[in-house]
Length: 436
Image (cartoon, rainbow, N blue to C red):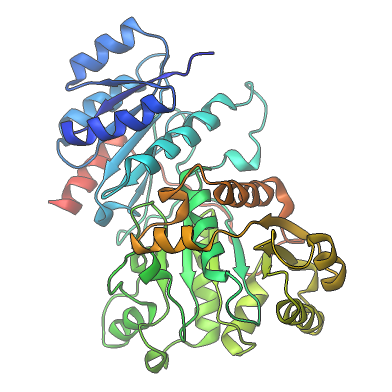
């Protein structure tokens, strides 16, 4: 069965690179330079299923093209490419489940290709009229009441409509088991392949290296933001503080040094992380291997705690210890192990039996692959999308989306949905003001 066509309105150099990856995946990638060209294309071909628009260079042209995509009976989703400084200030929303999304510059053509895959999977799985959409189809953007609507976040105080996101902690009291590698690549898979909006939080103020692994030089930290707030600055949401990686994943670093953590009150941090549920589908916390006050406060907020376990005796003993501590903390039911480097050492079944915690997924060994990706400031998902280990992480993401990673009951700090509709023209007015 032939794959659908993708209309692309990007600068020529970007179009060539993106087209190469889409054509390789079997799509018909078609360049359009004006609204008139797009209109003729849509009139002549019924297989155009998504459009990539430039949300940075020519707003008027993009606005005209967007209107054509949703004109009359059409409801073709748009992927809007824009600068990072504009990300987080709005959500796009086509009618029903055919929602529009955004993507940040700079980006890799490969990662954009996977976002297109995610959009089309969601569109092709839109349920029949009158049928509720499954939870895993809830991506960024909001349903429209009668016409196109958007959700906007920012200083104006408008609240996004992303519902109740999930908090996933990645933790093992032993270091060197792959917590950061799993956190980064799981977050990236959810963002660019599954159409989810992800916040990745480096909670390790001692040895954390998420930012350096993703090539983010001196990102703004939570400690610095709160220090500015204490000096009279405006209080900011987690979405405004976080730095956006080229994959689209938002990254929040607690502090740039272990000596700069005096403002990180555990209760306040936990409240901030819990509030991030309103802005993100998934909040993934990479934790330092300790049982200190900050970690205990965050454990309480988690929907699921993933415990990476490598098949060796010291790591297995550490996982057993954590299971026993989790009983005392009342979080035992939220634990799930992920068997990392599963193709070496003790068998996976034996690991599950000894730790006495079910395994959600197994991830094979591929150390140098992750190192090579980090050297380029990317996740392995972006750099080596067809690698078998990336398929393992993709499977882990699917298990979480299918409910394998859901917690029991409602976690503290959740809030009801808030909706705010506005015209797409209003969105562009705000976007133009934000980047001019």
